[in-house]
Image 1 (cartoon, helix red, strand yellow):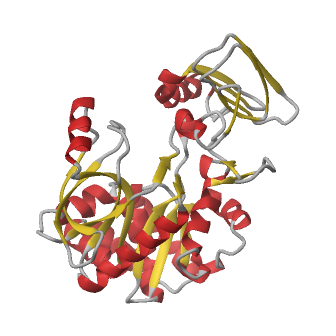
Image 2 (cartoon, rainbow, N blue to C red):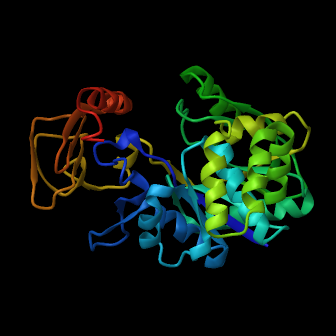
Length: 367
């Protein structure tokens, strides 16, 4: 049976001061609703709606940090009580994906599992749904395959990893993955785009739950053994106790390094499905700007008045607080109840560094 999991455990530090340790970006209503009503919804809701267009709600899982569990339940009333996977601590994506795969396989030993992120805005949803179905179909032809969804690039982006398409498979729209490339410099990214061979690596995958568990057993046996211990305990308080004991001890590593890179050495094992959509990875303030309303040449949320100002990202989290700009260009201006942050758009990647400096001086007060 087909299942999917939304990975929703990130802290979103590059969207500070809006995204905080106790309420990260995936739970904030920051994606503007379609239409003129002016409402907004969360990235987590966005991801949920994409998946239930393909799968029954009872086959959709969410993996998140334990401290976000109640907020996730409140945000997704359609999520089954036993479909919420809570990590006691963060141990990177190999362990989060492995834990979910183990729990899904415990319920459905033959499960096919899609892994998607709560960080993305994807349009049109219908194209995503069709490509996801195609990726599932690829498992019928190649049951041991690890399928990654590759986004057709629209620009020579240097902030994404790339996957190179190789030989076509028996499934239209799916090719063998010839190579994976880390974030390139500008000239290399331009060459990738011109070649037509490369796709952005979206970080979304489709595979059999058992396949990823077998891969972990081969390449990360300590994690595989720990997951077996967790699932061997009966569901409920006993399993929760083993999870709390074992999970923090697992080696911290990403699923790309632990599973995909070793598998890529086996010809035809890793496949890539071509996803031709408008794709936004909401990982920074300039990226978030694409989800906001526009006014006078600025991306805005909340009460904003500007004079001779353009190219700005302005976000006020206080509905009673006005942000007024005069002669401001290409800046990020964020107001929350306890922090106001201003920086040039070009320095937005340094927000994580800024947060570290704030924590050094003020501890966790503004985190």
